[in-house]
Image (tube, rainbow, N blue to C red; front, side, top):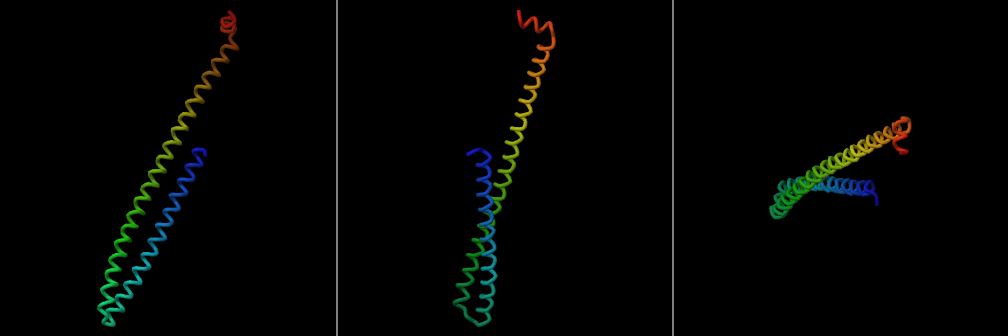
Amino acid sequence: MTPAERLRKHQRALEKTQRELDRERVKLENQEKKLVQDIKKSAKNGQMGPLRIQAKDLVRTRRYGLRVASAFVILKAFISLDTMLTITVASRYIQKFYQMRTQLQAISLRIQVYIFSPFFYEAILI
C-alpha cells in the first residue's frame, strides 16, 4: 500500500467517524426535544413519578451530548492537524524534488561543458 493510499484510507476513516458523531449529535438533540415535551406533558398532568425519571433522563442525555460534542471538537482538531501534517509532508517532498532537479541541471551543465569545450575534452582523454 502506497503512502498516498494509506493517507486516503486514513482520511476516509476520519470523515466516517465525523459523520457518525454528527448523526449521534442530531439523534441526541431530537431525543432531548422529545424529553422536554414529555416532561412538560407530565408536569401538566401532575405525574410527579414519571416527571422525575424523565428529568434524570434529560440530564443524562445532555451530559452524553456534551461528551459527543467534545469528541466532535477533538476529531475536528485532529483532522485539521492531520491536514497540516499532510501539507507539511507534501511540501517537503516538493522541496526535495526541486533540490534534485537543481542538482540534475548542474550535472547536465557540467556534461555540456565537458562535451563542447575542447580543452576539457582533451583533459578527460588524457
